[in-house]
Every structure is written in C-alpha cells, then in structure tokens.
Length: 442
Ligand code: UD1
Image (cartoon, rainbow, N blue to C red):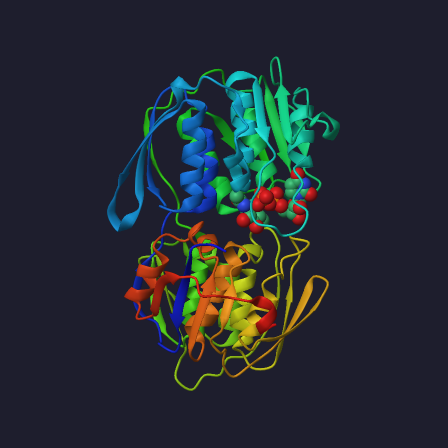
C-alpha cells in the first residue's frame, strides 16, 4: 500500500475560482519531441506532477540537460538542451512507470536512427498494445519492429535511414499518431498519417515540433502530412496548453457538490463534449467572454437528470473523463448509461464506488448507473489515475469522511489537487494510509 492517502470530508459546496495547469498528455509528448532538437528550448506551463518528473528523469538519463524552475501557480518552466544525449537506450525500470515513455522510441529513432526501449507501463485498462506504433515504424524502414523481435521485454529498432511512408491507423490511436509524427519529422520524404487521432494534445505536440523546425500540416484533422527535415534548430520558448481532463474533473467536482465554480485557463471548445452533456443533464455551464474560463453551477430549482454517454476519440467524449462522469451520473435522477468505447477494461473502479453507495451494473463495456441520493464516506482505493479522480469527486459529495488510499496514482496527473480543492472550500488533506482490509469491507 502506498504511504499516503487523501482524507476527504464531504458535503461542502465548492465555490470560487481556480486555474487549470498544463496538459499532462501534451507535455509528455513534447518532452520526448524536445529530445530531437539540435539546439535548446524553454518550456513553460509544465505541470508539476509525478508523471512529468518520471519523463524528465528518463530524458536526463539519456544525457539531456534539463533545469527546472518553479513558476507562477505552481507550474514549472524547463530549460532543455538535448545535445549531450549519448545513448539510444531507455531500458531502465522507470520506463515502465508511465505509458508515454513509448514516445522515446519515435524520438530516438528520429534523432540517431536507433532506439531501444523497455516496454512501457501506465494505467491498467486491459490490453494496451503498441502494435500500431511498431507497424508504422516498420513501414518507415525500421528493423526490429516485429513482436518476435522483443527480447527480455526490450524492443530495439534501427533504420538507415528512416523514410517517409503512408500510414493508415486502423484504430484511432493517440500514442501511435504522436509517435509517427515524431519519427517522421526527420525521416527522408513525406509521411501521411490517415485516420489520425485529433486530440488537443496532438495539435500541441505538432505545434511544438513545428516551432522546432518540423514541417507538419493537418494536425487536429484525420490526415496529417509530415515532410521530413534534416535539422531541427530549436532555440525558442513554448507554453503547454491547458489540461482538458483536469478542467473536466473540476467541472464535475463543482457539479456533484452543487457548487458554483469558475474554472480559468482552459480552452472551452476542448470541453464541449462534457459541457454539452452537463447542460443536457440540467447544469448551467457558461463560457465566459474572455473565452478562457467556464462557470459551472445549478440554477435554483432545476433538476438534474441522467443521460447516456459513449466515450470515443476526440471530439467525442474523452475516456479519461469516463470515471468522473460516472460519479456525475450517480448523482442524477433516473438510470443512465455509460458506454466505454475506447478501453477494454476501464470499469475497475466501480467496486470502489459501490463501497460508497453507488448502484451500478456493468455489462461488458456498458455501465448502467442508477441515481442515488448521496454517496457515503468509506475507505476506498485509487485503482488508477482517473479512477482516483472519480473517487475524489464522489468523496467531496459524500456524507461523512472518505479515505482514498494509493493516492500517489492521483498525483501522477493532478498538480496541487489538495490546495486547489481547499481553495474552493473542500475539506481535503493528505494523511497516512489507514489500516485497510478490502475483504472486510467487501
Ligand atoms: C492516450 C492517453 C490516455 C487515453 C488514451 C485515449 C497518454 C499518455 N495517454 O493513451 O490517457 O486514455 O490516449 O484517449 O496520452 N491501440 C491498439 N494498438 C496500438 C495502440 C493503441 O490496439 O498500437 C488501441 C488501444 O488498445 C485502445 C485504443 O487503441 O483501445 C486507443 O489507444 P491510444 O489512443 O493509443 O491510447 P494511448 O495513446 O495509449
């Protein structure tokens, strides 16, 4: 069990203003991309979260120079100089701590024509293959990309040199889209990715690569064209976009506590899949005129009704907000349906919500959610990052005190979550983990 938990006493209506941090999934791709620069760069609005520190350490272990300074609102500014990279191997144990370490395959392959990586880790939502990444690298001329080439959990790719190719992704994959963009940036000729993912962080990584000197067109649409360039001069500053999932989590936390919160430093169009569902349920979601904030509250007297949600790639409803949205559906009247369409097994947190009084029946990839009056405090475990965020939302709305163990999972992706929620009036603190016997409470 992890050494600390979150202790949350629910019932306070969240009120006030908060600001969203930089996007976790964007910065992880951007850090890998930065390893390809033939110069230096400055990265701003970097969230101070543990996944980012794992990635920074991985980049340093390759020989990159990275200095970090605390900036406003708790975020980090990084000075990055990858010119001292002296290995193509990222094979240490920490590679398995995060999924996004796979971006080092594309980046190192582009940088020096060779890359060796321990198979990546990340949250466990069932099978998480990287076959699409490997097939694309093979099409671009990389050797060693067949499943049988993996030895001792390590994949080693080599190309002399990488060349452009037409890559059709038969499943829309965020990771494969970014990895192919990275590899193609320095490949000879043009690469065309069709059926590409369109998530906001894909556009952010492409913008960063273009600022480095890459030639990428079409990011954010389903066809991306990359013309390889020999040199990426760098020497620029770049600011990471706001985190869509963090913003959505706070929108849901405001709603389930019947609060009134204005969330700043977000991009309202990125929130549309959630905002439209919340409006349909009866919440008021106002985009403010400055166009970088959203206010969430419930008009007095309006009732909140359940709805049906299906996760899908952007601009669909994000799978990374699915657990938090299930908490929202629990607090609505009637029966709602959540269809998880991206991951094979992303309802592992539901037994934990059930300990808090949720009434949910899962049939394969569909959860039928019965509205309840209130959650009740309990000791529960964060099974993964977003599952942990969902438990935080439920605990904030619950009667009594909840202990969320394994809280380090939550700190992988939420900068200063305790302080941010406290500033909105929540009763939340870090504490030592309580003695917890899941069987006794099952
Ligand atoms: C990224 C996000 C993750 C999010 C997911 C979907 C990061 C670091 N992680 O994960 O938080 O939940 O996008 O929005 O950005 N697939 C294959 N073969 C592959 C690759 C993917 O079959 O080679 C399948 C997966 O099993 C899954 C689907 O494609 O069913 C989508 O996965 P993908 O978009 O690649 O997710 P990640 O990039 O790993």
